[in-house]
Image 1: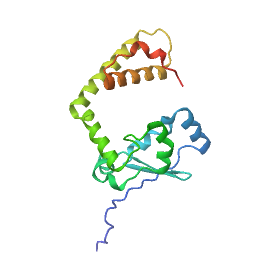
Image 2: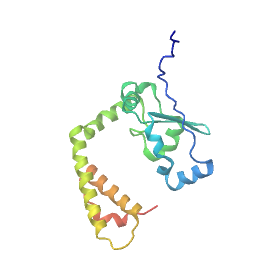
Image 3: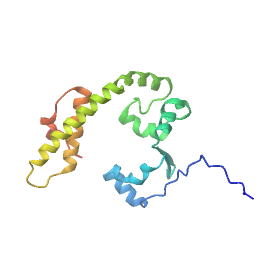
Image 4: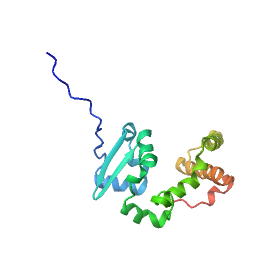
Length: 176
């Protein structure tokens, strides 16, 4: 006699245990925010975490991202904390706004992310990266990779967003 089996569960385990103690986490957030995102996070469709009173979700699965950002965006609001903390820095732009203002801003920004434009961006990313790698090959001694990556990022942003070459002016940008 076959025993009935439970139907497959569609609810994923979204909890991901903290990888660092509070002090280490705060140190990393202060010095290098990306180091808090360990590679294991990206193998999961969605991660839930809570730090003190802040609840956060990291959504990785493309279908989930589409659901949250496009299909069902009205059901997902930005937190009051996020708006209060990032609002003065980012203004009332696409990342902070909601409702009709967000919809209008999204429509304005959409052409910049058309498939054709993205393909052009990829060409620029590749070209700038190849130029940087060629420069690295001529370096006889160790160098600051973080500064080089910052310069690469600035070069790519200037070329894709403003069609400007700022590669000769990277040294003028203050380092944090």
